[in-house]
Image 1: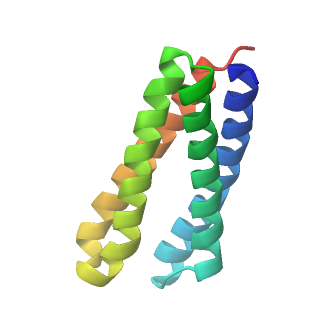
Image 2: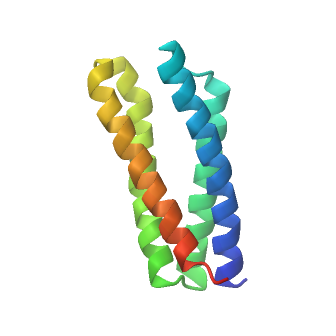
Length: 120
């Protein structure tokens, strides 16, 4: 297995996860209600799959430096996503928007770093 194939597969999985994440954000802010649980689960499963593939690549064949940095950023993002999901029960919505923006920003940075590390 070569790193370029692992990075490409993870990039596609993260693109799909981003689409589900954006749909959830639109539902959250347009209706001021929680998105369906199925959307959250699919978003999380796609993201975890991409992180698992990158972790496998890092542990076995090695990844380019930018992809390794993207992996660390995506791991932090996944933790922030879990906190965001649970925070709707703990905090007030005005505080959660900042956490959600941080989650979105870190996810975008990790995704674009992964894109930059992918060979053409």
